Image (tube, rainbow, N blue to C red):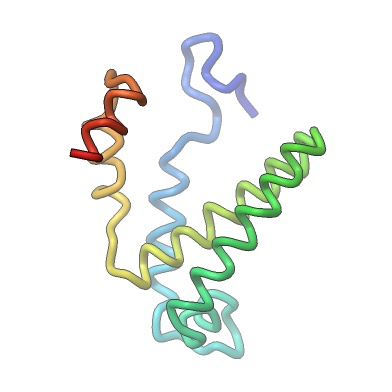
Length: 118
């Protein structure tokens, strides 16, 4: 599955999977809620999607605190999936998020937070 980039080589699974996931969840918009969990989320509205993101974030946090790496990976996957659904629901393209991350690259987190306050 890769070494998390420690050797300088790209892991076998890269962030491109997130772009593919986004395309998939976007395609489920307007789909049949009886045959697609993603379509069911959309049909329940933004507040429910946001609630699911929060629930998955809490579950990921709990697994991190427990020290269960495998469970943290699974919950993180769930969190990323639900976040992609939330983005698609809001019309936010992941490229906009990647751009924000790119703008922050090489900037101290402390300096970046200070800049947001002004």
